[in-house]
Amino acid sequence: MKIKFLSKREINSLVEKLIAISLISDTPKIKQIKSFELNDEIEILSSSNFILVRNQDELFPFLQDSDTISSLPKIVVDKGAIPFVCKGANIMRPGIKELPDNFSKGDLVVISEEVHNQNLAIGKTLNSSEELLVLDKGMVIQNLHFVGDYVWNSCKELNLSLND
Image 1: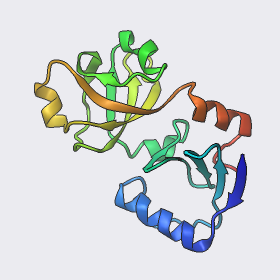
Image 2: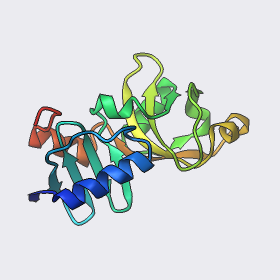
Image 3: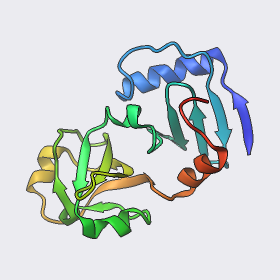
Image 4: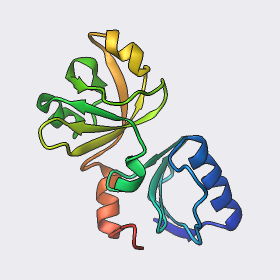
């Protein structure tokens, strides 16, 4: 694992991307961001403001970064979907119980379960919320990061929190 601090230029570029994909709404004062390169494809970016995951071309918040994921639209799945989502399965239309927020195709969403309202995964939508309402079947959300995955366990081992 490689660990490094991002340069000011890299931080500014990252902040611009975060604003563009609506993960942050204003320009926070970020003094440093620590990068944990887990392998050739996955990098964890940690600051006092957020914990993000960069997986090749995707950039999304870590599931336990409640402040950052609160800005994402939410999808609620039924309890039957929980074991599948927590093993990395993509979200199928029949498992969705609620669409409390609107979103566009390609947006990041947080997937929660219906009973305890716990966040299970971060996904990327394959359809807009309007399209999803008329669908009866099929894969509708690509699962990017879920409870118990490699990133989850790596953050736990690194003891990452928003106070680092």
